[in-house]
Length: 175
Image 1 (cartoon, helix red, strand yellow):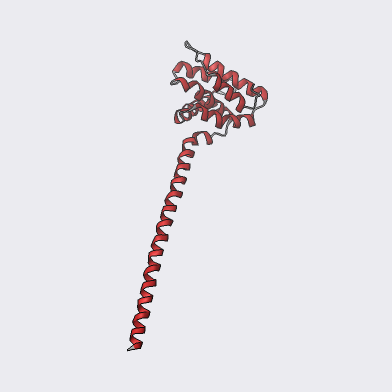
Image 2 (tube, one colour):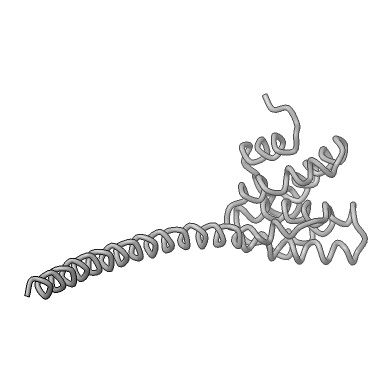
């Protein structure tokens, strides 16, 4: 009889610890699920942010980068009307042939429409252009932005802060 009681006792102890391990396993699984969801949310947020910037990260040509920068700054105050687009095409045609100008302006309009803030475009493209352009070409780029903004019946007033930020990101000394 005492062997039977000992066996039942051992079975009871084994059942108790089996149940405790099962509960601990479930708790660990829940913690891992929560951690996985948090990691997934962080990863998705990073991908969304990267996808928002993808039109800019895909640019590998200084002409397209310059066109996108000009369109973004000019379109900051409103949509790019045909007259303003013609002015942008004119300034881009100074540095590229006709086919390249068309491609650059079309891509620039699309990329600028994908990103709401011109500051993001300046922050992403100006360092790219700084690496690939010499000082004279960077000065020409600043003049191109001003000419595109001033062309047409209604000249645009580009904010001094935007131009200051552009000059700074292009590597010019700013006072």
